[in-house]
Image (tube, rainbow, N blue to C red; front, top):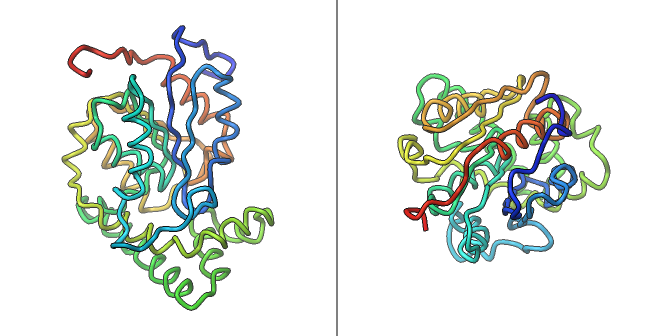
Length: 275
């Protein structure tokens, strides 16, 4: 597939996609994907805790991915048909959690560099390098958030994932969005690192999976994607040339083409056993 214009809708019936955004952003992340889908799918874009529409975590117990996932699982349970899950970064790890919670209600998965940090302790030397980087980043961000220096925390966070001076080049409205999100950052680091799931559990996910990775992905997500690519039984790995962690933005045409090919080529018919 060379362009998104090659897409031909497969079904007479609109299928649901739940798209889960990354840390520090909101549902607007999926604006270009919505345009590409052009009404052929019903796109649902629930926002996470820390976004204005969702509000802040109430702090009744230590935050987990299960707490974040509850909203999307409710959407899935309300649907008569199976849904497709799309997730980027934090949203990708969240999509994996949801797929394990409702495997028979998920038609397929699309994951761009899921930040499933809990896997890093399970995958040898590459994981050790990755967890060391994430622990260093997490410690710095959490320490700066704790004293109210949200700017220093977010500039370091963004520059780690997107390269030097990414914060300086960011649009003012997106900077403000990340500063508002900053207090949520420690909760997400904790939830991602403490997710109590073994790598082998993902071998039970039989739905088609499109797993994507940028050419210049950082060590943690590189190790995670590699491990998942050989564990998920029905997985197609796509390496996006020239892209980094935000490849779905910087290389949107390539990423969208892969997503549309995935949605258009699979057989997602619901069997009687899945009902």
